[in-house]
Length: 443
Image 1: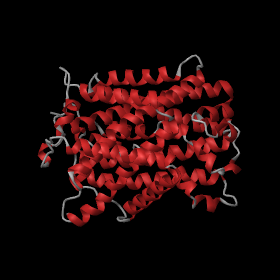
Image 2: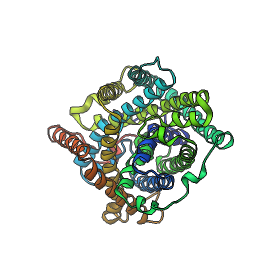
Image 3: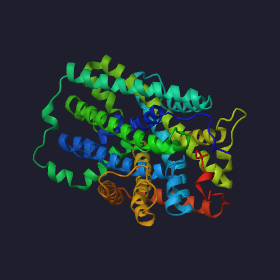
Image 4: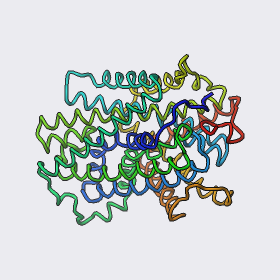
């Protein structure tokens, strides 16, 4: 059973999961694709502000739901409780395939790109494979060890980003006119290109719900999950806006356009080749905490699914020390397969479309539960309700519509993933918990 964790996750560690889940591939790799379709600094920087506001709205909504129904599993648990077990299973299936496995592969792909850019002798694919294998093995070293390891590398990553921003503003040559509003920016903000570019930004912010996946393993989840979600999102929003202001004002736009390693390219332009290589190495190091956070959250979610669905029971198998062997092996194997077969841009759009759909349905659950169970105790309530859920849902619909219009292939791959998940659910005997005393972390 996965319902009695021997080590409880602290507020600091949960906040580190949120921060590390967000600060990864997206912020260091997606700017090149944004400036390709929106060649103006002000609307691009505005993308990161809008993305932060939307993520914070989502965090508030998740906080209300998780405080009401504390259990590990994220959308798998929440959608199953709010709507129907099928909705929960499809969310869990998306988590297994796109949310964690594919995202781990994407992060490892970016790590390989950065490592190769700094040390050309390093093979990109080999570097990515090594990261997944090593961090999967470390996850088997026990929850207490992994919490300390993760909190430490996340703190180092945040300090490195702050150092980069301060150094760039102090010693670099920044052209601040590049992020000032200019003619045509209003039309760019209202365009489908802006909505499509927001996909990259929301991918960078994905992870704002990270604490929800380990809620059942936390100290006092009704209090600490809302705090972790809110604090983590605010910290990352500040880092992202500052970091992209540095990239836009100090980077070489032509060199960055349609490139994945924009962080290294911008750093070279600001600090010179040696300084850029050092910063690229630091960015590559920072990606390690993101992969680690995803493996941690993904394993927790997979164990809950394995506990509830007998066909997927191997996900909840442990070794003799009680470590999650089945979930770790499954997540690592899927990530390695995707890493060896996927392309960066298509993989990102496929992942974000499915995650955005799940998140929008979960946020809509706040409204549904307010109508369905208005008297249910709510340890945390969404501030300024109903504005945050409405902002999040409308933005998600706008983004999904833009993707369907501009890149229908990724939308079809997402639909195929849902169909496969529905077939597995219908053909599987289930052991879905009927009350909250059966669920992970509530005993």
